[in-house]
Structure formats: structure tokens, C-alpha cells
Amino acid sequence: MTFKGLVKKEIYVALHAQTARFRVVKYIVIFAILFALYVWKGWGTTWKTLLAMFVFGTAVHFFFRWKTKGWTESWWSYQSLFERN
Image 1 (cartoon, rainbow, N blue to C red):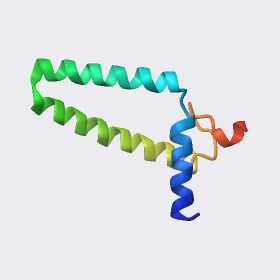
Image 2: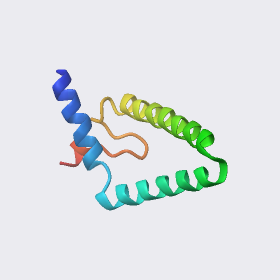
Image 3: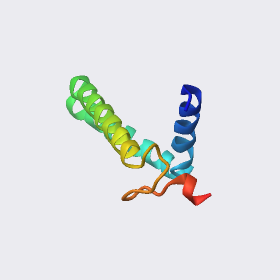
Image 4: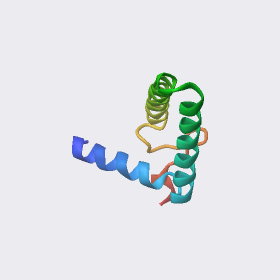
């Protein structure tokens, strides 16, 4: 698979694996938690939390990508978008 094809597949999965409503609510909750953390502990803790969330999210992404063989097979809570169609 070419790099362009890989990027297109990743974008497809990112946009179609969750409903738009779920994504909006998810980001509202994340930003609310980060804002509360900023107000409570300041920028230092907020940046560390953002970095930890990024590292953890990237690790989970690649773990699921590995277990689903590039999003083509269902595994655990992930149902392949390509098997549904």
C-alpha cells in the first residue's frame, strides 16, 4: 500500500469510526477537564497532562491498528468498518 493510500485509510477510519455527536461530546469533555485542571493546578500540570494524553492515545491507536491488522479485522470492541459495508 502506498503512503497516500495509507493516509486515506487512516482518515476514513478517523472520520467514520465514531459518530459526529460522539466526537463533539468527547472533545467538549476533554477541553472541560483540561480547563478545570488549568484553573486548579496551572499550566505546568496541564501541559504534562496533554503530553500524557497524546502519548497514551498514540499508543492505543497503534495497538488497535496492530491487533486489527490495519483496521481490516474486528477485534475486541472495534468492529471493522470494512466488514460492515
